[in-house]
Each structure stands twice: as C-alpha cells, then as structure tokens.
Length: 429
Ligand code: GLU
Image (cartoon, rainbow, N blue to C red; front, side, top):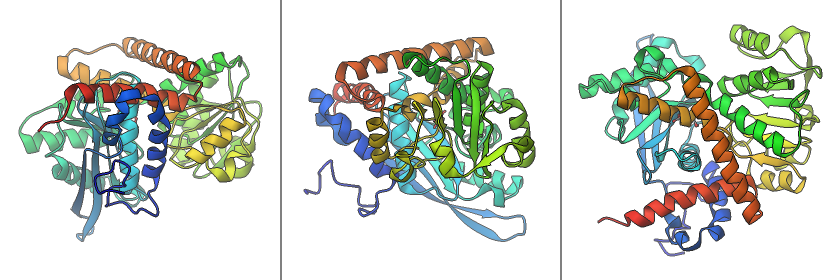
C-alpha cells in the first residue's frame, strides 16, 4: 500500500489491533459505495484532523506528584468547530478517543448541527481520586489542551464520568488562562454559568424520542412494551424513566453491580434514588437478579445499551431476543455483531442517531451563550424533539430508499453532508 493511501492506518495505531477506530473504519467502508463522486474525499474521514496527547502532572492530596495521560482528538472541523465530550475512564486510549471523535463528526452532521467532531479523555479511574484532586487534574488538562480549544474552535462537553461540575472547572481554567470569560468554550455547564435547561436529560430524552419513533414504525405499542437497559447513568436512567412514564415496562437493568429484573416493570424513579445512594442497581427492592448472559437473552421489545462500547459482540449477539436495539452508548455494537442482529431481523437505531440528543442541546446551549439570551426548558425540549424526529424521519427514508440499515443510512446522510462541504471548500494550501 502506498504511503499516502487513505486506507492505511495512521502509523501511531497498532495495525494488529486498531481497536474501536477499526470498527469506525469498517462503518465508513460500508458507506463508501453510496457516496458517488464525494467518495474521492473519503480519506478525510479515515484520518483525524488533529491528535493531541498530553501529560497531566498533578500534586495529589498526600503531596506526591502523579502523571495522567490526556487526549483531545479533532476528527473533522469541516462543518464547524470541533465538538464532543471528555471522558474519565481507566480504559481511555488513543484508538477509543479517535473513534469517539469520528462518531461525533457523524452525529453532529446526522442531526444537522453546524459542528465538526472531537473527543477527549483522561486515562484514570475517578473513583480513586478526591474531588480536589479531580479539580486539579481537570484544570491542568484544560491548560494543556487550551491551545486547540475555544468557543469557535473546539468545544468540550460531559461524557462518561464527567459532569456539570467538571465543565465549570474547565470553563474557569480556560477563562483564567486566556483572560476572557467565554461560556461557550464548553457545554453541559451548570445553569449558573450559562448552561442550558434540559441539557442534563437531553441524551436520554433523545434516546426516548427516536426509540419511540422506531417502535411506532415497527408497530410496537408503547403500553406495556418490555424495555431492558444496560447502564443506569445519565443516559440509561433518563431514557428508562421516560419510557416508564409513557407506559412501557422497564423489565431489566444491568450495570457494573449486576442485573436486576422484574417482569411487571421496575420503579425507575425509586431505582434512580437507590443508585444515587448506593452507587449501583444491586440490592434494589429485592428484585430478582439475572446473569449478564440471561440479560442479553431476555425477550424484550426494546434493548438499550447505554454503557460503554463493544458490549454487543459476536459472543452475545446471537442470543439477543429483542425487536429493536436503541444505542444510548457510543459504539456498543461491533460491526460483526451488527450483521448478526440484522440477520436475525433486529432493527438497530445507531448511536450516531439515537444518542445525538446530548450534542443537539449542547448546540442549543452554545447558541444561547453566543446570543446571551436564554430559553425555557419547554422550548429546549420541544426543539430537541423536532430535531430528533426530523433526523429519524430523514434517515429512515434514506434507509428505505437504499435498502440499507439505519446505521448505514445515518452514515450516508452525515458523510454526504461533511464531504459536500469538504468538496466546496477544497484544499488549502
Ligand atoms: N458526550 C456526548 C456525546 O457523546 C455529548 C457531546 C457534546 O455535547 O458535545 O454525544
């Protein structure tokens, strides 16, 4: 393969194990035949625009100095500033952050938000550090990446194990470093700092909106529909509550503490309280417990993986007995598992569409920051609903037109938008 081939992996990734980036590349390859002349630009999607790896030296509470590995990857900025969350997790690595940044590009384009795609992460287990230590780590991370972020350049947001408080520290660190208070440098901030009403629930609400639309298309009645959720954090917890409030039964929840099950439906409000108090679903109201294998094999109408990537793989995909998978997490299904589910007649609403509610309301937050004019929660929620329903309707029409899965249709819509802009912009210098 020539050195300049678009198909060559960046030399800084392990060719024997490209990780989540390999999954992303496979998804892009599946869409190439549908891009017509724009496919000449596909190489720009197969490489991130910019990768920054930083050392984060921080003094711990005991006076010793620890070093953390931090990342910010800007995959594409063709349609607008880079956009995407920052996660704190012990498994954070370059391939993962690259894939997550690329999925952000696809996601923002899929819902027609004028942003590119980026992602960040710090490789650490936040449970091992005090709030003061996490604050110092966060501030030093922002200091290290401050040359490439900004309200018109690249805008971080919450992701796994980061919150409004993390965003407040990020905004403050950026403000002090640059001598400007620029609320639009991060989204998902507390309301007191210019955050948007409805942002915390937005990802879960979006999962509910597109999940309901997919159920309607499949002729599944919401009343008493059986829902299973993996992950009961911000995304899974909110989506579960909204489905339950609409009459569905949340029959099983699986998190890092175990699986709980009740075929009559779990009380999602009481469960959220239990998780807040105890850190997990285990021990909730004496609900039955299941093994992870039993969870995946449960007969349900909708299965929502809302935890981490690579949860539905060749190992468990064949056992899954649901009608619709709605991906709350980023990258929960491997391409091989995707094929198995599809062959078994299971419809997948892909992450890049299903969980785009978060970045949609991040966009609303950024617009509110830019105009210094704030919206009511009703306005935010109703605009979110319109945006998600329109995106779902457009993408399902594309899927029908080309006889492809919703994932490929989302990639067709999003990649066409990005590459059309790339084609119009051309190369410089
Ligand atoms: N971390 C979220 C995601 O994966 C939100 C990103 C954002 O709001 O920028 O979509």
